[in-house]
Amino acid sequence: MNLRQLKYFVRVVEMQNMTRAAESLHVAQPALSQQMSLLEEGLGVALLVRGAKGVQPTAEGLLLYRHAQTILRQVDSTRSLLSKTADQVTGTVSIGLASSTARMLALPLMRRAKAELPSVVLEIVDVPSADLTKLVLQGRIDFSLSPDQQPMQGLLRTPLLRESLFLLAHASVALPRRTLTIEDFAALPLVLPSLPNTLRARLDHAFLTAGLTCNLFAEASTSAILVPAVRSAMAATILPCSAAQPEIAEGSIVAHALDGSLSRELVLCASESLPPSLAQSRVMAMCKDEIKRLINDQAWQGCALLD
Image 1 (cartoon, helix red, strand yellow):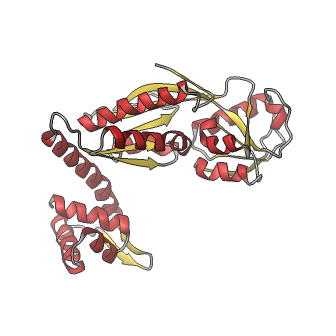
Image 2 (image 1 turned 30 degrees about the horizontal axis):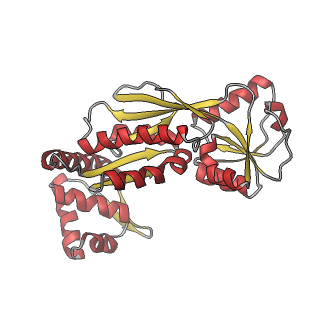
Image 3 (image 1 turned 135 degrees about the horizontal axis):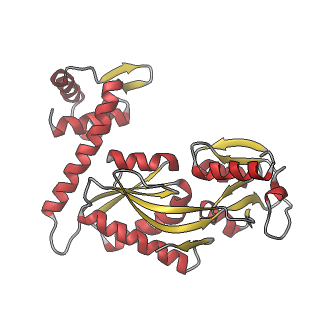
């Protein structure tokens, strides 16, 4: 087993097609197939199976895929640390963001990174919030901005901000022009984050405490689905303003303030066992600074800094 084989294997799993993987790697397909056969022979297990859905990893292949991602990222970080110069920061930095946070932060952060760190490549990984910490601990991403992340072994936590939650509804929905109580919208069809999700658990508890039943229209694991549902007047949802900032600005969605203490905390999470490269440290600092700028400029509404 060598690094080239691991790189090839990761690409095959991600492309799910030997021909496309070979083209993206700029190698001949027979040569790629041979390397995969040598890898399986060296490890003594079957790693890939071909079927109607293309090339899929076996259980052992999926395990190797996860470890290979970590190994290749560590090699890339080590190479960056050893080759950096005094006036240039290089490397790839992978950041995990929930969809709501990505809508507010991803583009400003990418723009600033390209201006200040031109030799650094940012990878924005937009996944459901429940999966963010797992990816950090697996080494798949360098750090994440995770909502309501509790202390966990092997995880470094830095609380950054607290976001208030709002009822996000289509502009045509008639609601009282005041801070809403849960009784005001209990009958309204709601599309909510699916469990496991700390925001959803908090909402379920609020309905239970009020002795009310939520009129659940549908569930989704990401605000990339929740917000379009609200914009189409299908249902309302409960999220921070950051999840629908463009729609709120244009007036298609209205953010209604909620009575009580419904909020979430955004926490920067990194692995305790994988020291950050210079590029990662610079991007982390830039991320914190960009968040402060967005809040101070009132572009990121309904939240307050914690540090």
